[in-house]
Image (cartoon, rainbow, N blue to C red):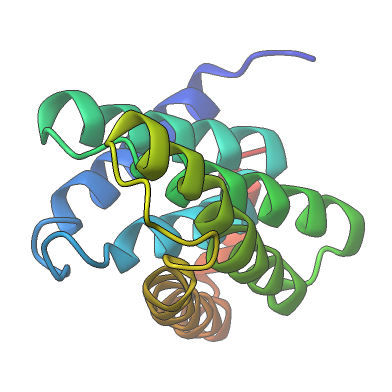
Length: 166
Protein backbone atom coordinates (compact mmCIF):
# COMPACT_ATOMS: atom_id res chain seq x y z
CA UNK A 1 0.00 0.00 0.00
CA UNK A 2 1.38 3.37 -1.03
CA UNK A 3 1.34 5.99 1.72
CA UNK A 4 0.08 9.35 0.52
CA UNK A 5 1.14 12.51 2.33
CA UNK A 6 -2.04 14.25 1.21
CA UNK A 7 -4.17 11.43 2.63
CA UNK A 8 -2.26 11.52 5.93
CA UNK A 9 -2.82 15.28 6.17
CA UNK A 10 -6.55 14.89 5.44
CA UNK A 11 -6.70 12.16 8.09
CA UNK A 12 -5.02 14.40 10.67
CA UNK A 13 -7.25 17.35 9.77
CA UNK A 14 -10.41 15.25 10.08
CA UNK A 15 -9.23 13.93 13.47
CA UNK A 16 -8.49 17.52 14.53
CA UNK A 17 -12.02 18.56 13.53
CA UNK A 18 -13.34 15.78 15.76
CA UNK A 19 -11.06 16.86 18.59
CA UNK A 20 -12.34 20.45 18.40
CA UNK A 21 -16.01 19.42 18.15
CA UNK A 22 -15.90 16.80 20.92
CA UNK A 23 -16.01 19.14 23.94
CA UNK A 24 -18.59 21.39 22.26
CA UNK A 25 -21.16 18.70 21.44
CA UNK A 26 -21.17 16.29 24.36
CA UNK A 27 -22.85 15.29 27.55
CA UNK A 28 -19.94 15.02 30.02
CA UNK A 29 -19.37 11.52 31.32
CA UNK A 30 -22.21 10.18 29.23
CA UNK A 31 -22.04 10.72 25.47
CA UNK A 32 -19.55 11.99 22.88
CA UNK A 33 -21.45 11.82 19.58
CA UNK A 34 -18.81 13.69 17.57
CA UNK A 35 -16.53 10.65 17.78
CA UNK A 36 -19.16 8.68 15.89
CA UNK A 37 -19.72 11.46 13.35
CA UNK A 38 -15.98 11.41 12.63
CA UNK A 39 -15.92 7.60 12.53
CA UNK A 40 -18.64 7.33 9.87
CA UNK A 41 -17.73 10.38 7.80
CA UNK A 42 -14.00 9.66 8.03
CA UNK A 43 -14.45 6.14 6.67
CA UNK A 44 -16.60 7.42 3.80
CA UNK A 45 -14.32 10.35 2.91
CA UNK A 46 -10.90 8.84 3.57
CA UNK A 47 -11.61 5.18 2.89
CA UNK A 48 -11.68 2.28 5.34
CA UNK A 49 -8.00 2.17 6.35
CA UNK A 50 -7.41 5.88 6.76
CA UNK A 51 -10.89 6.38 8.24
CA UNK A 52 -10.07 3.86 10.96
CA UNK A 53 -6.65 5.49 11.41
CA UNK A 54 -8.45 8.84 11.85
CA UNK A 55 -10.71 7.33 14.53
CA UNK A 56 -7.70 5.86 16.30
CA UNK A 57 -5.89 9.19 16.21
CA UNK A 58 -8.94 11.00 17.58
CA UNK A 59 -9.33 8.43 20.38
CA UNK A 60 -5.66 8.77 21.37
CA UNK A 61 -5.88 12.58 21.32
CA UNK A 62 -8.96 12.46 23.55
CA UNK A 63 -7.26 10.08 25.99
CA UNK A 64 -3.97 11.93 26.18
CA UNK A 65 -4.93 15.58 25.74
CA UNK A 66 -8.47 15.69 27.16
CA UNK A 67 -8.00 13.14 29.91
CA UNK A 68 -10.97 11.04 28.79
CA UNK A 69 -11.53 7.74 30.54
CA UNK A 70 -10.66 4.41 28.97
CA UNK A 71 -14.22 3.87 27.75
CA UNK A 72 -13.14 5.91 24.73
CA UNK A 73 -11.29 2.86 23.42
CA UNK A 74 -14.19 0.39 23.09
CA UNK A 75 -16.59 3.28 22.55
CA UNK A 76 -14.63 4.76 19.67
CA UNK A 77 -12.68 2.02 17.96
CA UNK A 78 -14.91 -1.05 17.75
CA UNK A 79 -17.62 0.84 15.90
CA UNK A 80 -15.05 2.54 13.67
CA UNK A 81 -13.60 -0.83 12.74
CA UNK A 82 -17.01 -2.26 11.92
CA UNK A 83 -17.93 0.89 9.96
CA UNK A 84 -14.72 0.51 7.95
CA UNK A 85 -15.47 -3.14 7.21
CA UNK A 86 -19.04 -2.33 6.17
CA UNK A 87 -17.90 0.52 3.90
CA UNK A 88 -15.21 -1.67 2.36
CA UNK A 89 -17.77 -4.41 1.62
CA UNK A 90 -20.76 -2.29 0.53
CA UNK A 91 -19.62 1.29 -0.26
CA UNK A 92 -22.99 2.29 1.23
CA UNK A 93 -23.16 5.09 3.82
CA UNK A 94 -26.20 3.58 5.52
CA UNK A 95 -24.50 0.22 6.07
CA UNK A 96 -21.43 2.12 7.24
CA UNK A 97 -23.53 3.93 9.85
CA UNK A 98 -25.19 0.62 10.82
CA UNK A 99 -21.73 -0.88 11.38
CA UNK A 100 -20.81 2.06 13.61
CA UNK A 101 -24.07 1.80 15.57
CA UNK A 102 -23.85 -1.95 16.12
CA UNK A 103 -20.09 -1.89 16.75
CA UNK A 104 -20.24 0.89 19.31
CA UNK A 105 -23.77 0.64 20.66
CA UNK A 106 -23.75 -3.10 21.28
CA UNK A 107 -20.24 -4.57 20.99
CA UNK A 108 -18.36 -1.53 22.37
CA UNK A 109 -20.79 -1.23 25.27
CA UNK A 110 -20.43 -4.90 26.12
CA UNK A 111 -16.63 -4.69 25.86
CA UNK A 112 -16.77 -1.88 28.42
CA UNK A 113 -18.07 -4.30 31.03
CA UNK A 114 -14.71 -5.87 31.97
CA UNK A 115 -13.11 -2.42 31.93
CA UNK A 116 -15.68 -1.13 34.39
CA UNK A 117 -15.93 -4.26 36.51
CA UNK A 118 -12.25 -5.03 36.93
CA UNK A 119 -10.23 -1.92 36.12
CA UNK A 120 -12.54 0.68 37.66
CA UNK A 121 -13.71 -1.67 40.42
CA UNK A 122 -17.46 -1.79 39.82
CA UNK A 123 -18.17 -5.48 40.57
CA UNK A 124 -21.97 -5.13 40.63
CA UNK A 125 -22.19 -3.84 37.08
CA UNK A 126 -24.03 -5.76 34.35
CA UNK A 127 -22.78 -6.76 30.90
CA UNK A 128 -25.55 -4.63 29.38
CA UNK A 129 -25.20 -1.53 31.57
CA UNK A 130 -23.60 0.73 28.97
CA UNK A 131 -25.74 -0.24 25.97
CA UNK A 132 -28.37 2.55 26.39
CA UNK A 133 -25.80 5.34 26.75
CA UNK A 134 -23.55 4.01 23.97
CA UNK A 135 -26.52 3.51 21.63
CA UNK A 136 -27.85 7.03 22.18
CA UNK A 137 -24.43 8.54 21.57
CA UNK A 138 -23.61 6.48 18.48
CA UNK A 139 -27.09 6.85 16.96
CA UNK A 140 -26.98 10.62 17.33
CA UNK A 141 -23.43 10.88 15.93
CA UNK A 142 -24.12 8.46 13.07
CA UNK A 143 -27.33 10.24 12.05
CA UNK A 144 -25.45 13.55 12.10
CA UNK A 145 -22.78 11.95 9.90
CA UNK A 146 -25.42 10.73 7.44
CA UNK A 147 -26.96 14.21 7.26
CA UNK A 148 -23.53 15.77 6.78
CA UNK A 149 -22.58 13.26 4.08
CA UNK A 150 -25.89 13.77 2.26
CA UNK A 151 -25.39 17.56 2.21
CA UNK A 152 -21.79 17.09 1.10
CA UNK A 153 -22.89 14.72 -1.68
CA UNK A 154 -25.62 17.09 -2.84
CA UNK A 155 -23.17 19.99 -3.06
CA UNK A 156 -20.49 17.91 -4.79
CA UNK A 157 -18.05 18.33 -1.90
CA UNK A 158 -18.10 14.64 -0.92
CA UNK A 159 -16.89 13.44 -4.32
CA UNK A 160 -14.22 16.17 -4.39
CA UNK A 161 -12.94 15.17 -0.94
CA UNK A 162 -13.01 11.48 -1.84
CA UNK A 163 -11.06 12.25 -4.99
CA UNK A 164 -8.52 14.30 -3.01
CA UNK A 165 -8.15 11.43 -0.54
CA UNK A 166 -7.30 8.90 -3.25
